[in-house]
Length: 122
Image 1 (cartoon, helix red, strand yellow):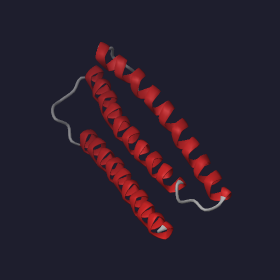
Image 2 (cartoon, one colour; image 1 turned 180 degrees about the vertical axis):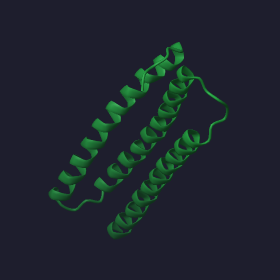
Image 3 (spheres, rainbow, N blue to C red; image 1 turned 30 degrees about the vertical axis):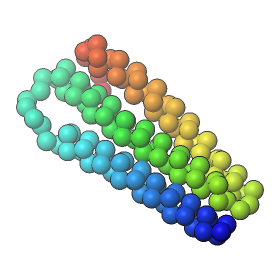
C-alpha cells in the first residue's frame, strides 16, 4: 500500500510540474507575441506602458507557475524517504518561495504604476 501511495504521489507531482511548465511556456509565448506583433503604432510613452503591461502579464504567469512548482515540491516531500531528500526539497521550496515573494512584489509595484498611467522609463 505504501508503494502505491508513493507511486501515485510521484505521478501527481510530475503532473503538477508539467502543468507549471505549460503555464510558464504559455506566458512566455504570449509575452513574445505581444512584443513582436504591434497592434498599432505607439508613441514613446505608450510603448513603455505597453511593455509594462506585458511584463505584468508575464509576471502573473510566472507567479502561477512558481506556485504550481511549490505544490509539486510539497507533494514530493510526502514521499521523500531520507532527510537528505527532504532537505533538498526544503531548500528548493525556500528558493522558489523567495523568488515568488520578490516577483509578486515587483508585479504589485508595476501594477500600481500602470494603473496610474504614469509614463515610465525602460
